[in-house]
Image (cartoon, rainbow, N blue to C red; front, side, top):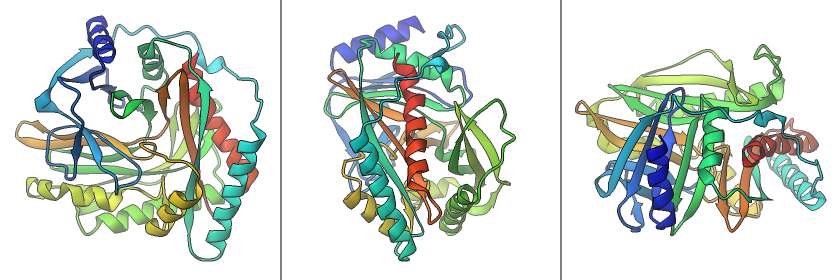
Length: 358
């Protein structure tokens, strides 16, 4: 693993693109090191590589192609767990202006819902904090240890920027003729148990996401089915989750972009109706989400003549530049949302990411 980290550090110092990542629940670290600094933009998803896609699907996705990269992998068994990073509690000095702006944004969203224009909308904000740790792989290692069941990554392109994250949400997984995704929504802090009660607001929000995904996929996926809703732990937070699966054949691979377009952006990161919610977000949020709530992962990787892809929604993430880390957080808004509580939810989410910046 030390050798892989050495290669990544050199790649970063040479200002060459790379991605290093670990899939949920696995102990294998993988990386792609692009051989030049070309920015590969893609319109379709038929080229093998690692895709990094923005929230706004009118913008192009970035690809680190397998054919133009060196690739390595190693076991993570020798990782040493860091000191207890859950103990971090920053001075809760709240930026009053940021709080007021977010509460106003949430109120505006609630009014759009009550007027019938929206059923749900996911509203977010960006918080900048000082970043003085010169070893970005130290931060990456903390993410690996803190979130064993998340997709953890560090992605860099000199013409785009540096991003790290640990996302709990699968967008698309295809393997051996099977298709898997999930409907994830609702948030509360994890306090010693996953046996918790959920409010009507969170249940309604998660049901909207599940219904949308099932309806949209029914026309393109065979034998689609879903699990019962259950509580899912992601680091220090809990969410409501439903697993959705079906069949996919090799003949459908050329149409894979249709499946992605049907799903992205999902109601879990955008809202319903999708087009109305997206328009509201782009107009009212007041900042560019860029790759937050986009998606990322392996696309069209070949395995035993089967094409497989593993894509994840880009949540619990940050971008880093010029000694500043920009942390991106948000939450789902329904007619029953309480703006002050929605603000507090975003504060909790920023703290989970700030923990790894120590």
